[in-house]
Length: 97
Image (cartoon, rainbow, N blue to C red; front, side, top):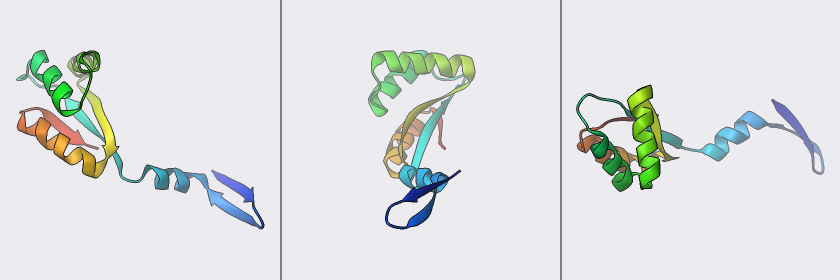
């Protein structure tokens, strides 16, 4: 989508490029269901590493259980790396997308 903006002279701005630029390195951590970890393990991990409230962690655990996956944290790629590493080292299955 293109938008024309009139400041002193007419310039053309591509809205899609502005959105991509403003998002920068925004990514998300997706946590996947497995047959190994308990609800308590997932909930405690989300509270500890993703700083979820108890209610958020419980809701994410339910979504993971029934849907197979859930986005549990969003942010800059660099900020997500240590959180992802902590989840993985806790034997959870997660990806940064």
